[in-house]
Image 1 (cartoon, rainbow, N blue to C red):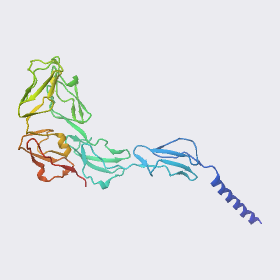
Image 2 (image 1 turned 90 degrees about the vertical axis):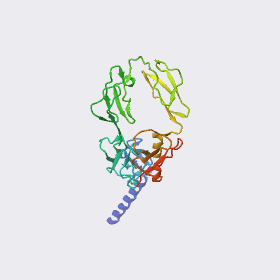
Image 3 (image 1 turned 120 degrees about the horizontal axis):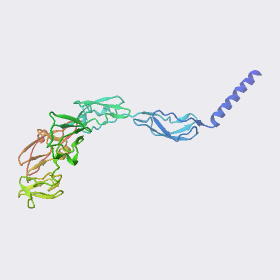
Image 4 (image 1 turned 135 degrees about the vertical axis):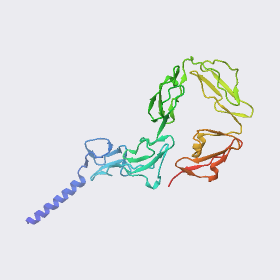
Length: 336
């Protein structure tokens, strides 16, 4: 009889436990999400309540979706944040030494060697450096910075030896008496595009007036020349017959200086511009000029920019200026 009572008690307890498990109210504590935050923030949650969570910078949800539901077994799916892998980096003004895309997405702490384009250097100012995948993304954030060379100051005191500055750095300069930098500044700042303002001191004691406009080859101004021009005066140029004007035909008198005059070129002259070379990922083989003017029948040699390889045949990289036109070769990124 005692055994029967014990067995009956166990059955009753089992039934009650099952009843309580399935029919008692479901309560969840607030979710614990390292490296994440959630909404709404409550002290307790009832069954079927949901929270929406997001991960902090450098982390992503472990599974697809950002909503978790309070269930009898706890939060489902479990809200977790994991390190965000680093995708293939696009390095502005630089390239990876070995760019095999099978290595990406990269794991945290993985490193890759990279180089910078001409006139740009890593923050360490070495010839190369490492790009590291971190929880916050690639480091350094700006792998390639402009390096500005200060070795000459027009109408001012030039340094005794060449000085190098990184993007964002400034240098104080001294102009000759009666001269000043643009906008009366006394410092140059190294920017992504080079020195700002340009390292050139302009006359400031002339009351802003200008002398005669600068002469140009194969062209002249359209108005009668004067000995003195007032500030903001505009002068127009024109080219002689058989010559074509390149640049802005109007120049302006500002701070006692004329803006840059145009050029008058033979109509069959080829203008090799920086924009055209960037478009085809090429550069001049023997020069570092941003622009080149070549006459008809002149030969021009190109090469691929760093990190690029030939698409068009080898012979196309030595081309000829013909009747003012030139056919550019083409390069493409190196992807192993």
